[in-house]
Length: 324
Ligand code: ADP
Ligand code: MG
Image (cartoon, rainbow, N blue to C red):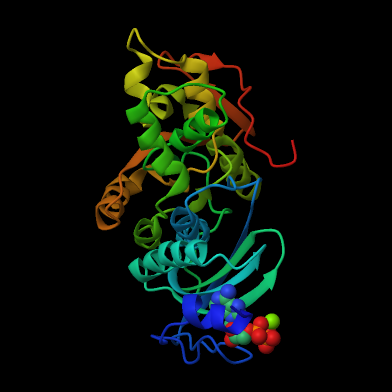
């Protein structure tokens, strides 16, 4: 099968809201008046971001999910995306699964595939997403102020636990592995929550490399530091029920590492002034996504990790860094 047949079969569908989709030299989008375009790219590389034998349908889902997560972090509504794909060979079963997972998630969010590039090479998937946000209302990393509450959506650490289990570093009970593996391979971008937080959150970003590392990007952009209640973050992992049990396969150190520096969570971490707690609760409802208050922005730089008694923990939970 040639390049153009492949594109026609797996990646071409009738245009919906775009002016022009796959098939010409450029796609054409018409942003609504008063809207700004929000644009982001993420690349997934075999061996680095996924295992060679991962289910192609899950991979298609994840490749778009991580990009939609960036739009969510800015409070943008998804519009369209492009797909640049390097494939070692034409494997129709793989392509069918990959495009099914990719386009199913695209349909959920009304985000249409409008173009891309296809070439032969080591498996590499690069997606660029385009979203829209009312002018001046995008959620940025730079708006956090001392005294603001810090929140995180959903759960933390499950994806990292699954990764460690798949790498053979720890053993999980089968039901827990299945549950955490879903979080690793099929993350849920918090698109509705991000939009609901416009005008409520003072800053936001998505958690892709680990909570503390990503939060430190907000603090760097905004100025100041943070206190994080680790007895609260520790409870945001699906595995927490196993920790207190006598048969726990791992201790609290792993729970701290996974929740604070795990990576691959694709949740939103955001800040809001304490007098906006009702508005945050309303956004959580509107976005159909639980959020948990996990700490406070401080004027003084640095991260303070405290336990239930308010005692400081030593901060040794560095974020996942691809170059370490
Ligand atoms: P050009 O050579 O002008 O860059 P190509 O021949 O690479 O165009 O691609 C032909 C058309 O197919 C273009 O509209 C391009 O956007 C689209 N396309 C190529 N690869 C993909 C892909 N993986 N998914 C979606 N559209 C694609
Ligand atoms: Mg080309």
